[in-house]
Length: 296
Length: 276
Image (cartoon, rainbow over all chains, first blue to last red; front, side):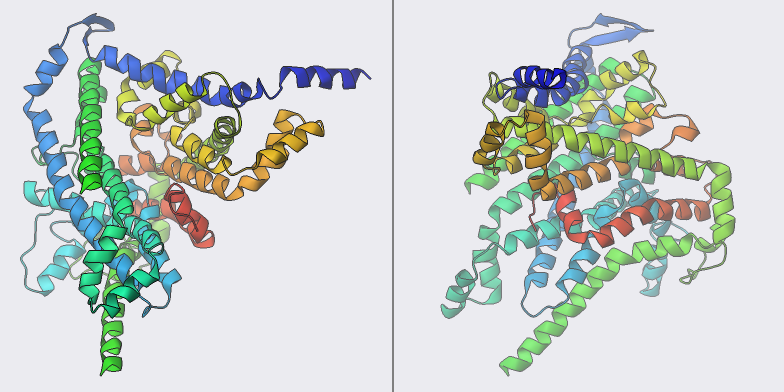
């Protein structure tokens, strides 16, 4: 009897009107403490300086300093150089492999898909470590293979140019299969009769690729471009492990610089300003990409 | 003629695709072989392509540098706890957004969508201050809590929950079932594929995460795998044998899971954007 009473009371407390608040409560509490508060606090911090543990307002000083900071510029330029070279190479490879795998001539789809996806399950740290060994200047297997075809050894990780190339190599190895699987799923949604109609009209495979496959994949394409761009702008693990930003800041990235100013030099205000510039850059670029790719 | 052409095309495709597969897989082979070789042998000209017999010695050095079993346990405990709670609370939130009408719903959903666009880096400094203020450096909760409520997971669960028919929920209510009972025994069981996708996504992002653990963990016995591996790279004299072994060990558990649950795994890592 008593038990019955309490369930009725319980039902009154949690009814279809109040239930959504109970369901939302854990997520909302966590988001307020660990996302909303930090986002606001970081914004305020970006206008503050520190002496010891005391904080004081400095206006736009952190931002002004940032725009005069050569290492910040370097990190911006590096990140964009890597972005502009790496994303197109990776996405082209991914599309081509996906089209190849989607061909009716090919069997063992399951095997190929798993094999290509394998790099995408490895931690970026692990991938970087493996390539650190492969790309070793003196005894790495990469230089050994190059020597077999008569190419002089490359100072992969210690030369400013090749250090960037090394990071691009790791990123491409790690993410091509990932994007390939996304394209493959997109390809499978393209109606087969589009291709049949095109071949009746006499369009060859290459023409079909550019006039049917690419336009049909547009939404998938936008998705992968935006995601890869956001990911590259946040590049950290590869640079931290492979080169720690060197040589001579040639592979310093925005996030690596943020990490160093924040947690090596403990300049919280300055690091926060850096973080907010990153937010603005990501917002602008994502917006432009969606506009440009979306309208054409 | 046409048939012959097709044969050439087919061979060409297989050759190109196989080269790609070799490029994908060879680094794993290289890593595994490296873990059985002494540091000097990994770097020899010409390179050693076959496994050696230095595995146990590498295991010994690795265990002297770091308590590797403890580190595996740390990573596993953090990743599993994080995944279980994250999946549960994001499913609850997604359910609220998909199947209820309440005050502030659209505003709340909009704010959550906005936080989806904000990079984690922005929160690093204030989160670090919170963790220091609570004296949480070198604790599991410091790693687990900050990203536990994931806007992405909430969004994904909400999209999937939209397809749950209201009639099932209504008739359960008429039968007198409580709201939580309806959620756990009627709604959740229909959501298994979405739950699996979110679980795999959450688990992998936590298992592989470097930046935040690197900031909050500085005592060796609390390290997670990525932090531990990066500490081995930071040594003045890197022992490549132990480094390769550590890297191999960090990948093996995930690899086994992947090979068993391939399809779920792929759609999970892609964040449910690709449906099987």
